[in-house]
Amino acid sequence: MQTLKKPTPHAEALLIAALVVIAILVRWVGFREKTTDMSIFFSWYHQLGRIGGWRSLGADVGNYNAPFLYLLAFSHLLPGPLILKIKAIWVVFDVVLAFFAYRIVALRWPGSRIATATALIVVLLPTVVLNASFWGQIDAMWAAPALGGLYFLLRDKPWWGVALCGVAVAMKPQGIFILPLLLLLALGGKIPWRTLLAAPAAYLALDIPAIVFGRDPIELLTIYSMNRQAVNVPELSLRAPNVFALMPGGPREDTLRTLGYLFAAAVVIAVIYVLIARAVELTRERIVLAAALFSILMPFLLPGMHERYFFLADVLTVVLVMFRPRLWYVPLLVQAASLLSYQPYLFGRVVAVLPTIAALLMLAALIIVAHQLLRDAFRKDPLEEELEWLTRPLGETTAPLPVRRA
Image (tube, rainbow, N blue to C red; front, side):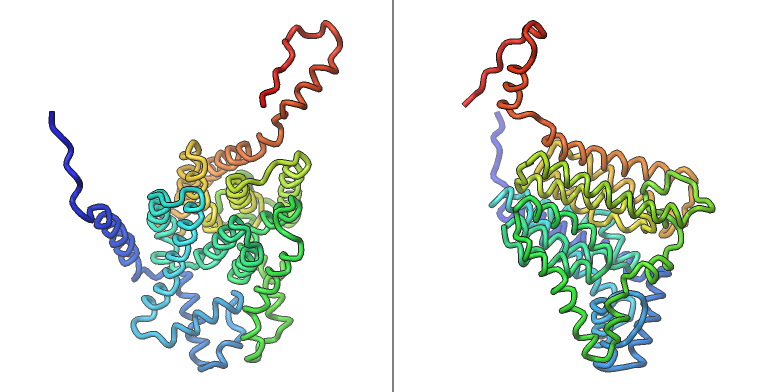
C-alpha cells in the first residue's frame, strides 16, 4: 500500500503566491485598454491639471463627488503613463475589497483557510478583474468601504461600521445599497440610533477639503440630487440585468421611473418590516444574508441602473456562501448575469436575448436569497404550534400533542 508523503515545505504558501501573481497578471492584461469611461476620466484629469496644485481639490469638475476628484488630483503626482497610474489607483481598492471579505469570513471561520480562499476568489472574480483594470471603473471604490462597514457592524462596532457606510455613499451614490441594512439593525436594536449620525458625518468630512479650497458647498452637497443624476442615465436601465430589462420602454418612462423608486422603497421597507415584526434574531449569518439581499434587491428594482451596479452583490454573494455553503450556486447566478450584461459595452456583442436572460438569472438569485432570509420569519416556534393545537375544535384533527423539547 502506497503511503502519502508530506507536502513540500511551504507548498501551500507557494500556491497562494502563484494565485496572487495570476491576479496581478490578469489585471496587467487589461491595463492598456482605453474605454469611453476612461476617456471621460482623462478629460477630468486634464481639467484638474490646468487648474493645478491644491486649488484643484476645490474644482467643480465632472459629476462625481469630491473624494473621487481627490484621487484623480493625486494621480498628477505619480510617474508613468496616465492610463496606467489611474488604473493602478483604482486597483488598490480591489485589494481593500478582498481584505474586508477576508476579515468578514474570518469571523465565521477563525484560523481557517476559508477566509484566505474567499479573498483569493474575490480578487479573481471576473467582474472584479474587469471593472478596474480593463474597464477603468471605480466600483470597488464604493463597494470596499461598504464591505468594511459590514465587517465592523458584525464585530459590534457600529460607529466604525456606519461611518464606513457613509464613506461608501460619499464615493458613489450606489453606496446606498448598504443603507437598508443600517435601518434594519437600528430597528432590530442591534445598533443604537445615534450611531446613524456617523454616516452623514463621514460623508461631510470627506467633502470638507473641497469646500475649504473653494468648492460651492450647496453645489457639492446636492451633487446626488435626482435632477442632476437622472440626466446621466435617461433610460430606465442602462444594460442592467434588472426588472426594467424585462419590460419594453415607452412613452411613459418618466412615470415608470417614479414608480420604480417608490416600489423599490416599499419592497425594502416590507422586508425590514417582516423581519422586525416577526422578531427574527439578527445573527451574524442573517446580517450577511440581509446585506446580500439588499445588494441584489435595490439595483434590481431601481431605475437608471448601469450593468456595473451589481458589483457589491457579486462580492457579497461569495461571502454569503462561506456562511451558508448550500447557496454555492447563488454567486454563480449573479456572476453570470453581470458578465452577460457587460458584453455590449466591453466587447460590442449585442444579442437581443441576452438582457432578458441576464435579468432572469439575477431574479432567480434574488428569489433564492430572499427566501433564505424570510423563511425563518414565518417558521412557528414550538410554543406557538402547541397553542394553535390547543385552540382547535375537538375532533378537527387526530394529530398527537406536540412534544416540546428542552
